[in-house]
Image (cartoon, rainbow, N blue to C red):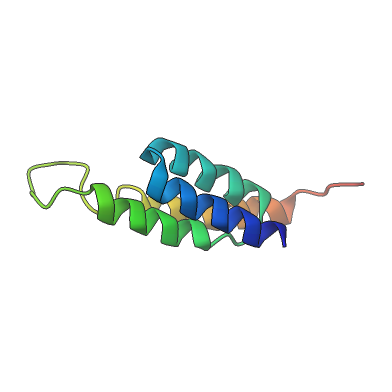
Length: 86
């Protein structure tokens, strides 16, 4: 239920707030939830909104998607190596 609520919040951030708030939410939710692949989809949406079609611009398509994929992958590895005692 928490994950669905966070997905709705992320979707609202994508459409109504600047990109950096959505990117911060993707980072926070990827740390909180294991395997947060919804963040990769959200990063793909950010890329499709803000990417420039010119090849001379260095920050083209994939500027958010690739780091989001790496973040989800690394958070899974790090999460498996950490023991948290409640």
